[in-house]
Amino acid sequence: MIGWKQVKERLEMLGYDLKAADLQAAGFCAEKVCCSIKNKTHLADIPKGLEYIAVDMAVGEFLQFKKTFAPGDLTGFDLDYAVKQIQEGDTNIVFAAGEGSLTAEQRLDRLISHFLTYGQKEFMHYRRLQW
Image: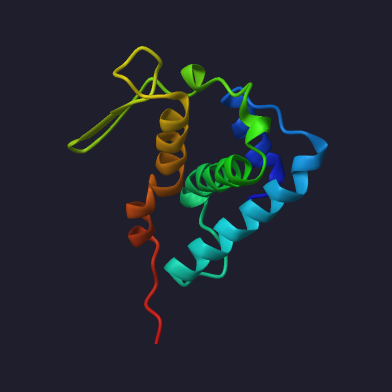
């Protein structure tokens, strides 16, 4: 089971320091993602192999929450540090500054989208049939 601590650690890797006021939101996002994965896989617990995906999805949920309700908190968030390039199959996304003409908000939107959707194909490896 993931919680706010894993979300905090992952956000710190991306250059965002979680504040004490953010802990409740981070915990809610982690719980929301856990419930979503359990519903999609029909499992009682999240398998170890899906925990890193759950953490990234919770980070995406948290960043979406902050962008919607407290965008000023993300002004110091360094998008250049977060991701340089992601390639999955035929899809190639570059987030770093100076690449194309994306604004900071567009880069943040793409980063959030990546966190919310990356790895969902792996759910099928753990999915149980439900009668």
